[in-house]
Amino acid sequence: MSTFMAKPAEIQRKWYIIDAADRPLGRTASKVADILRGKIKPEFTPHVDCGDHVIVINAEKAVLTGKKLEKKYYRRHTGYIGGLKEVQYSTLMSTRPELAMELAVKGMVPDTTIGRKALTRLHVYKGAEYAQVSQKPEKYEF
Image 1: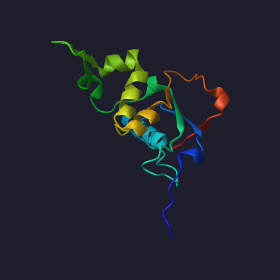
Image 2: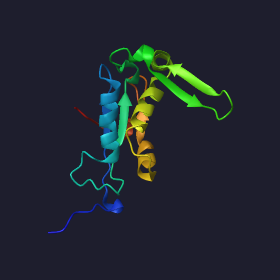
Image 3: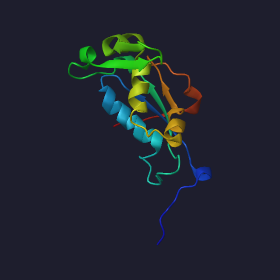
């Protein structure tokens, strides 16, 4: 008996839609990362990009548990001296909730070419409207 190895040409990509309303941000992001990598498929192969497309709607209604809204910060550096930029998650969730979801998912996919390619298949929307209606995404329940 031999081990099955998925080939990139034989991958069938599906479209899933996930509603993030009233769900914890991190738990939603971990499930999205699994779908993007293809870990929910029985033919998952670690060295082949076999993930699916994911549409996340209602990102503004995602929940941060505990005191994360006040204590958690999104930090980045411009590269210049004194260029540290901080944004509190309460501000980030009210102004750019799509970025908060994308950052959470980005931290859960591997930092390789496969992970970067998987992130191109992620589409996050603030509200319930999305542009990929013609792909006929199926609702993913977890």
